[in-house]
Amino acid sequence: MLTASRSLSQLDLQRRLMQVLVVSTLSTVGLLLGIVPSFKPAPDSSMFHLTLSHAAYAQAGSQAVSNDEVQSYARSVLAIEPIRVKAYEEIQKMTGSDDVPVVACHRPSSLSELPENIRDVAIDYCNQAIAIVERNNLTITRFNQITIAHQNNRGLSDRIQQVINQIQNGG
Image (cartoon, rainbow, N blue to C red):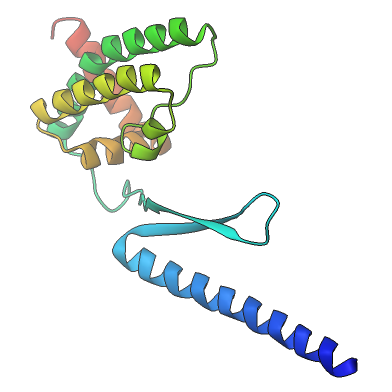
């Protein structure tokens, strides 16, 4: 009887060590490829669900935002905002609630999780927003980097706001 419990505990230990090894390996490979794996326990199970997402690196300090990029970003934000408000209000009417689901155009999973009628509105919004950003000579990646940077950098935020004010005042 003692042998059975000992071999069971060794098996459990080996399984846990294997999980740690798999997680460590996937994490290392994922970070090298710019993908972040995450494991979440499955409900009512000892299994885990693996999800992969792209890593986002804030580069505010190492990659300065040029004046041209600030201009492009400000023009993009001003052009996107009315489309965003319209999509938000449309989704709000569809749901009958002020609690509108989060739409993250750079995360396809956030779109695929939406009900179909809301997904159509969200995809249309995202397509329009992407086209606006690209027309203003920014990539989506760079637009998102500037968004993150300006949330964490008061000086950049002030520069962007100043350009937005100039554009709105016809300057």
